[in-house]
Structures are given as structure tokens and as C-alpha cells.
Image (cartoon, rainbow, N blue to C red; front, side):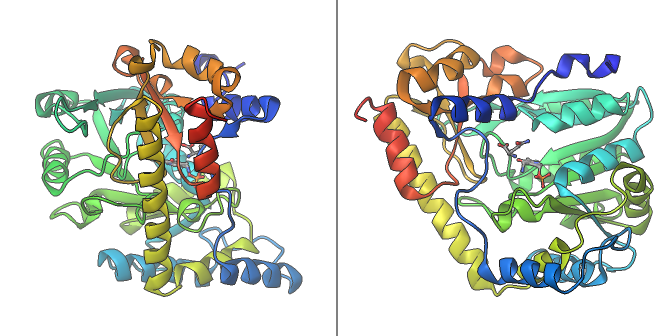
Length: 384
Ligand code: PMP
Ligand code: GLN
């Protein structure tokens, strides 16, 4: 056993999905859609498989995909990228984030992030021998949107800070960082001369506010690696096609690590994701509208079932407070929920260093067909 990985055990997603399979519960735990992505993309993958795109692609990804990634960033976010030097394809966002941290951090360096954090962040930071400096997001007294304390963020930056790792829209809280919050983060990155790595896998899933890539703020393009992935936007979480974009020196640093983690990634899926990234705006708008309706449906259902519910402005997820239902510990509550109600959710407590802040919070995924959400709500209300 690698000593520094010992505390990590099994990820909560594997544990909770296995529990759903074992109990036959409705799985609103792990975030994966229960419908397939755009047919044009699926057809392109089948064609690529049948026509010989089955050997190692280039290290940085096939040119068609790199060009499509660059065009997509230009179309939606106005970011100009050179497809040959400023784009690298990875095994999902997960590999891009891990490779970025391994490439940029020396042992002992510090990474500023927000908690709750996506669980791979803590593991990747630990693998690099770096240290996380989490700043806690807490639901506001009024309105219930997650916020952080400016002084806590300022205090998290110091002489050992190497990078800031930011996820917006944010899993699990559904927070979409505002222009003002991003400006503060950008100022701190520049004041302390550190890099930023942004995880924007939910870039097309914003229902309130606006998605602003940190890289578009003044002074940030040259120090930011922007990470995204096809999994969420095109409902193909099992494909694990992701990417990082940024200035050539940062992208080549990621490539240097990536070549020894996975070397290259699934060749027939790359032309298919290129097709998907080039779909007309209507695809992205309709996808967003469908998920927004799901968000509304699940939020209303959870309120009806007696949970406290925090507004979700983005992602696949909504968080809930179990205390109105007599719960005190999210882990216990989620382990018992399949037997109690036939539903699986994820305790968000496991995504905090300061676990008290999240002890009573759990996360539900709404990237499911409306009838599945309705069935889960019926069960949670004890009506199934
Ligand atoms: N970051 C966040 C915030 C996520 O929710 C996920 C899960 N999709 C990932 C990264 C991992 O993405 P991928 O499956 O593309 O590796
Ligand atoms: N990103 C998804 C989630 O947060 C799935 C993560 C995983 O299974 N590793 O649920």
C-alpha cells in the first residue's frame, strides 16, 4: 500500500453505486445521466471504430479534436487557443487535473481550493506530495446559496501557495462563482504569483448567473489551465474524454506528465467528441433546458419530502439538509436511505477537511429522466 494514499479508502461514488445495485434503490448518488448523448456523436464513434481509428492517436489528441476544442472555447467563451500548442486531450477531466497538479507542484507546495471539493482533488494533491488549503463554502443564512469568507480566502494564500484549484459551476453545491468572486480569486493569484487550474466540466450547466471562465479575467490567461470534459456536456461519462487548455508552457507541462500516466486516450472516441463540440448552439440550449427542468423537479420534490434544500444554480446536483428529517450525520443517513426509502444519495461530508461544516448535508443528482426523479421523490415521501 502506498502510505500517503492509505487515508483515501474507496471513493464514495463507488460505494454508493454498489449500494444502489445491491438494494435496487433509485440511484441519485453518482452523477451520470440515464440517457445517451447526441446521436451524431454516437454515430461518429461507431463509424470511427469501423473504419480503423483504432491505434494510438497522437500524444496531444487527434488534430480534429484539438481544433474542435479550440473552436468551442472561442464560440462560447471568446478564448483564442492554438490547437497545436495550447490544447491537450486527456482521460477525462480527472487526468487533466491530476496531471496539472503533478506537473506544477513540488512536494510541500500548497494548493488553495474550496471545500466541499470533488474527491479526486484531495487525492491528486496528496499524490503530488502537495498540501491542500481548503476554504469552506457555507450556505448563507438567507437564500441558502453557498458562500465563502473573503478573509479566509486571503488567509489561505501564502508563500508556499503554488496554485489555486477552482471548480465552477461547483460540484456538489451547485454554486456558480460570480464575476466579483472570480475577480478576487484572480487578484490573489496575481498578487501571490501562482497558477490557477479551473475545472469547468459543468460549463454548459448553468441555470442561474453566468459561467465565467477564470482564464477570461485580466491577467489570468497566461497563468490558467482550463479543464473540461465531454462526459457531462454530451452525456458520455463512461468515455473519459477530457482536455486542458492554456498557454503552451502549461499545456506542455501537463503533457509531460500525461505521457507517463495514460500516454494517449481512446482513439475512436476522439473524432466523435469533435463532432459533438461542433454541434449547433441549439444542442447546448436544449440540454441546459432539460437539466434545468430536472433541477426544478427534484428541488420541489425534495422540499415536499421534508428536506431543507439549497438552491442549485448549476451542475447536475442539488444539496439538501437532513436535519428537518431528524438526521444528524449524512454518512449514516445515506447508508440507511436505501432501506428507509429506496433511494441512494451521496453524503457531502466526505468532501470536506472540516467535516463538521458538511455533516448534515447530502447531495442528489438530477441528471435522470423525469420519471426516475418522480419515482425517487415518491419513495422519499414514503408514497411508493
Ligand atoms: N470534476 C468534477 C467537478 C466532476 O464532477 C467530475 C465528475 N465528472 C470530474 C471532474 C471528472 O470528470 P471526468 O469524468 O471527465 O474525468
Ligand atoms: N463526477 C461524478 C459525481 O460527482 C462522478 C464521479 C465518480 O464516479 N468518480 O458524482
